[in-house]
Length: 138
Image (cartoon, rainbow, N blue to C red; front, side, top):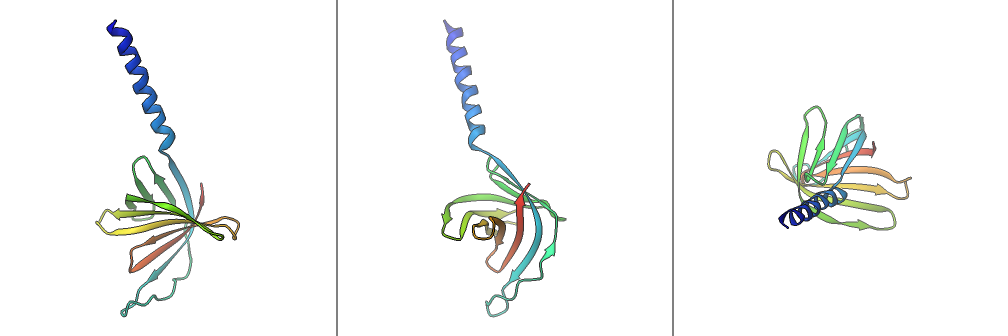
């Protein structure tokens, strides 16, 4: 009689692991360009830098709660908070409050521009500087 209970427990355990895989996902993007915006001395925003063409991989892993940008210096962001999705007539915005490996907090937003053929952009906002990547699904 112990064996059937063990068998049932094993089936329930394996089913639980299988269901976890359905809810945690990894999303892979490729960048096509990057631009940077910085605040000046008096707290006013400067100008966006010229768009630099870059071909990088970005991985959003909701299982590991991590976003990684595979640039020359790999950027690793641990997701602290998943912000509710915001949607309006022009954009769909998925945002995450994150911390990089240096302990700096930032907000990373993946924006889909509905009226621009669903073009996607990723903004990494540190408060005093913003890194913008044009991205597409890999």
